[in-house]
Length: 68
Image 1 (cartoon, one colour):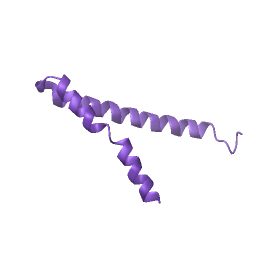
Image 2 (cartoon, helix red, strand yellow):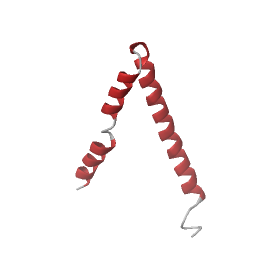
Image 3 (cartoon, helix red, strand yellow):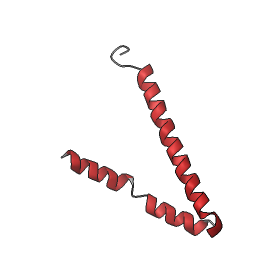
């Protein structure tokens, strides 16, 4: 059952990459398409890392077992 949930999570979570890159390549000039994709990926990776850090910090700060 877990593998099916994992499959559907990736199916729906990663579905936006194709249309996003297609629109970026359509909007941005051909000389800057690589840079646009790189900046998009950098911002996404940075935001994902910061969110994980923030959730970890909040989880450590507001421990429900010690602080109900």
